[in-house]
Length: 130
Image (cartoon, one colour):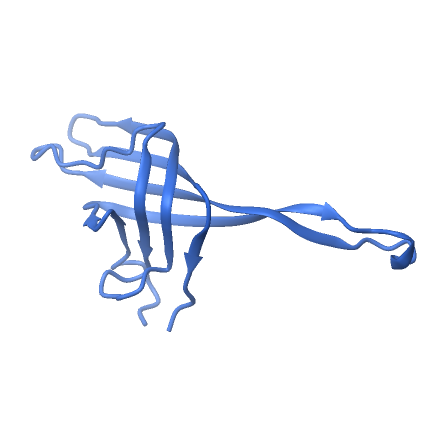
């Protein structure tokens, strides 16, 4: 397995987004307080509701106009995050995810940039690297 992310990939419903330069998946759970007399006055946290927030950053070709429509409020189907584009199984697979924030910009002699924050809707799968 490569130690760099040079072959990372983001797919939406089977289509690979071109120009992606980074993705980050941040898993979280709500902390529940399960402390009681039985825990002798010590903390006893439990995991509650969980989810994952994904940050996607990319640069797209201004000349061709090809870019990913990651607009706020868009529900994405089958969002797959790959560590390596040649991997068969994605690192994360979200059957449904919601784009919460989208930031797009372009400049002369520059690139068309897009940054998106996406949150999982329902369950998702995670796969450890082989």
